[in-house]
Length: 243
Image 1 (tube, rainbow, N blue to C red):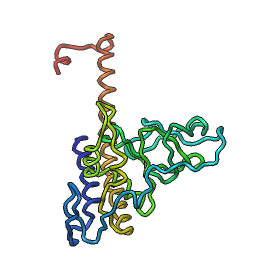
Image 2: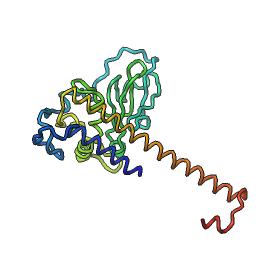
Image 3: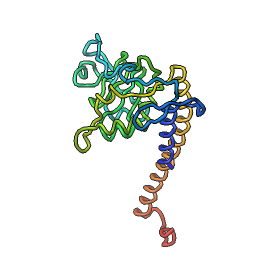
Image 4: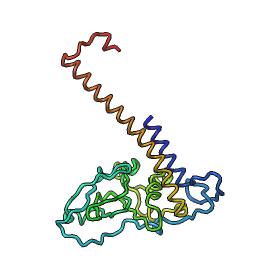
């Protein structure tokens, strides 16, 4: 059920950000790999023309001042677990991001697993994270729409085909992301799509949370059952064991 719910959520996102919400709108050939037709009024653009990709830091902070710190394990599927660290310890060798930026993994398997989050309410408005993160700063695009777009299956599959490296150290090409062509809806439609996905994906996330809670409860029950049996605290008959 968990696998099915995740696949369903992925299909919701992909359909909405590549086809829109209106099934009756006139369509056109996009010329985009794996996309096919898109709404006729959508514009085909390059990622880098509407998004500032991997922006440079322009900060005037003292080394002892705090900023948000985000190692890879802090970036989950839509969730950023915020930690704090002194600016001087991360100002070089780490990936910079700011309030409103979208950060997402570029290394396998974190990229495929959807390690992505919107950076909001950062300490001193700035954050530093793993060097294995990309940063996308929305400029002429809705932040929430972009957040969902970067999770769609078409983008992910195309990005995976550009990965270089060996074994577990393969990375998505930054040139691919910067020059990636996509079909962009008007801003008001981007907002409508984002709101629709926020609602639908929120429902799916609640179901996933409930399923994971059941699994955790069963694991705890299993462990307690084993402990009670092997320590003699439970009178285990042959029938109970077989059952």
